[in-house]
Amino acid sequence: MTAGYEQRILNVLLDKYERSKAYTENSENARVLLKPLSSERLMEELEDPEQKASFLETLDQLSRDGLIRYSWVRHETGNLIDSIHLVLDPGSLEESYRRTGRTAKADRVRELMRDIDDALTSGSLEHGGQMESFLLGQKKRLQEKKDIPRFFFDTDEKNGERNKEDAAVLNRNLLRVLCVMDENRMRRSGDCMERVLSAGLFGDSKYFEHRLKSRVFSILRAMAPDREDLPSDDELLGEYGIVRWPEIFELTGDLTAVRKDGGRIACGSEPSGAYINSLTVRELDHVTCGDVRRILFIENKANYVWYSLYQRKPEELVLYHGGCYSPSKKIWFQMILDAAPQGTEVLHWSDIDIGGFRIFTRLRRELAPQAQPWRMDVETLRQFDAGTMPITDQRYLNALKKLLDDPAYEIFDEVIRYMIRHRVRLEQEQCILPQ
Image: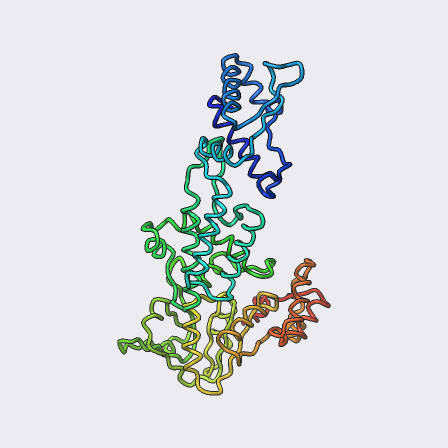
């Protein structure tokens, strides 16, 4: 400690109070105290007679004001302080907070609860969706623990100086972003670049990146199931339509994209594959699929390139899936599926692992209920046995077992049982054959 004892004594005691049962459980028997003798730094400081006099004078004044009580070490009255107790009656606590310039933790908790309630009733969140469930869970935690969850901002101490940044403003801005993200995903509004989003919401193109992005990532990771198999941060954010730059969508086959102004993009004229970006997708009226009899989604980029160059048949349309598709890519995929001739076979090729199963199941649930897995079976595992990877994590095996109880994954039951029995999984790249 250095000089300025009133603020420092009260801040230390209030920090202890906010972690104590006196605060969390409103316990009348709890005590909040400071033992000066346990602070080597303080005791060294009080070797200076002037500092010691100032310290004792401050204690005496705080005691007369009814904010603390203190006691002396036995036989050391007037010399050594044994303990300093914070007075816990509401009026005294309020005055202690006022003198330190702090907002009481109970008030910070109530304010965050109100802000979460505003987000929940804004109409921007999908009813019953993951974001709504997450925020309801955080509200319940606030009620039960009376503490600011780690996903949100709170005042803290850094290098001995109290951080003056307004955590309440940061929390409201964080909740604004979460609402925009969920609304974007729910209404399939297409992609929005991070800096455009930031400039539109906060008048600062880098505010989201510098102040909120890491918190958003931690929330998305917490919301994602089976954390041993998470997509990347940018992929998680992309599911909500927030991207760094416009996305590039890749395909190979007989497809023509028709813009609203009548312009045409003949992708089929590019035998090695064509590209279209997410901004162009917004300008499309429709697509036509030509003489397509089969659509094959491929998760992995290397496999997409290999298959498009060496394996694709003329009647096939091959689409690079890329894992966790964004709202814009979802719109693009939906356009293609809607344009496909009746009876077109729809297949999907992913890794033979939890992530691949999940990617396929999402595609089937949201876009193509007729889709079938391709090269995601026991036969493929046996064929490429030399390239399989061992499963050593028991948590991963337990997650596989849970999939057996989920009807959405029933199509993979045989291969999942094989994976559990032999403790193996297979990445797509191992299936690429030399040319």
